Image (cartoon, rainbow, N blue to C red; front, side, top):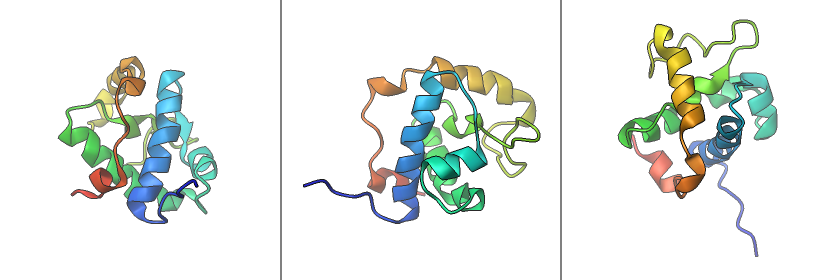
Length: 116
């Protein structure tokens, strides 16, 4: 029997992570709205905490900031509140995200994504 991901912020973060590594593999960015629809979240405003979970996990493990490929449609850049990467370093960080082999590692667990 399949086990559903929990409807918690870390559960949403894992769903989000899986979509983002697919985008990274294809060297793509994704808008907040498209990402919200892909993970079946009611709107892009509900992505803040899941993306924060991913950002903290990437930081703890010294990985490229996966959330840097999530962008506003109008600007092609992350929301102003995204502070894991300086604004002038976003484009180079995306190159690192796209070059990293995300599929070479087991995805984070919901428990790992819960850690602050």
